[in-house]
Length: 419
Image (cartoon, rainbow, N blue to C red; front, side):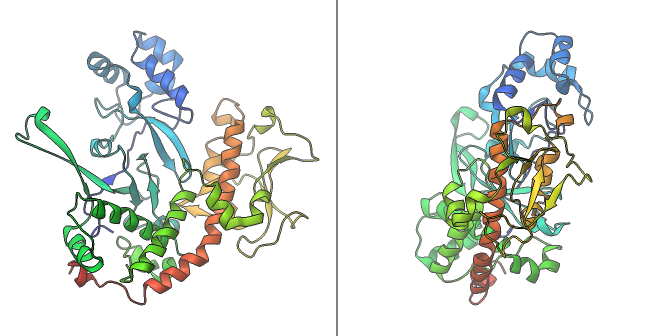
């Protein structure tokens, strides 16, 4: 990957806690908090209202940081950006690059954030599921993969002008994040046109990102390359056949949509799950009846080593048995309310080194959020996660077949100018 895409950026590392500070699930809550931060309220008033902003983290001096920021700038709503914290767990971040408000803000990520996407991966993964990259459409956390995530931007922003030291004369220019040798080789091979700043090169990077997703999410690819993946970046077999490359890119788009919590994945899930979609993940009460807002309190602990409560069971009348997902089961929020039909392979699915559903639930236990229940919106997100993971598991057989075809006649490294 690093030979295909020469520019890479590490993920943001705020190191200020996962809620109550510069990170929040609800955008409006974060906006109100940061408006207070830049207001004329005293530090004591702010500490009382928002203690998370005044906790000492990693050498962070809350008072001096606030004084420095408030003396030079005001609150800016444009700095509140979507933030992929963990797989399928998107929040909002107040992205400030100055005065150490964030521990590692990665200003180069901020510079390249607008209208861009990032293929997020790791070299030398420590866990099996960390071999699988994700596609981020905004800021992403350093520990989106537990090993430490690195993002390859699709476009790289450069500034050119008469005088590089005079910002007012600099003009931003976008170029495809693609090795020039690779671009020249593929351009000639497939009859493409222009330079790295042209439409064809930038379109090719987006297709290559999705091809990488399709290959790396193939279970057979993971099995075949387990040892090499633990020692280096993923090596991608790019097919010489353009039609097969387009098939891989289309399959990778399915992966990207399913793993993007900000994308509407309804059409993709229905196509892959068909009639089984409606039976996966509805939230129910034991004994029947409607589920109210106060019923959604998450009392079982799924954090860290806690096991929560996933209970296996047999298929019910409206559920079709599937070899894709294994043992049927229910996932409990509390003693009376549960997420119905969460099959075992969906429940145990891991990405980035984390069990995805367990990780999401772990940070939303009632004791970690002042006894607040899940909102109806969060309940819908949880059901959507069950269906997204189930659809991705269904897609695995297609990805295996495409990977197998790609290995029969791949482009050689020397043909791409990489040797």
